[in-house]
Amino acid sequence: MVGLILVCTSAMSYSVDEVDPGLAEIINFRQYSESFASSGQPSREQFSVLADKGFERIIYIAFTNNRN
Image 1: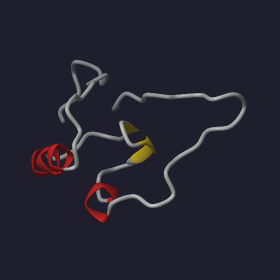
Image 2: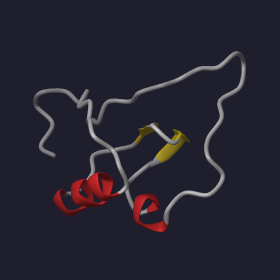
Image 3: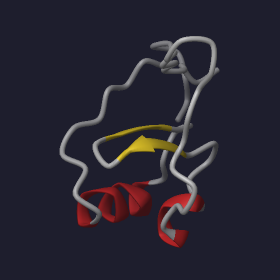
């Protein structure tokens, strides 16, 4: 099971309407602003895409027994 980051702004959640196609391939990718997004576990190749798009930090919140 992969962890989930949830951001709540009042009673509604918002996401960026147009997501870069390279980022959209990441499982459950949701971009909430230019500097904040959440997703499932990226593949090794997708980490490079994230870096190329300006993401600098990854917070890994999956269980320690996750095989990904």
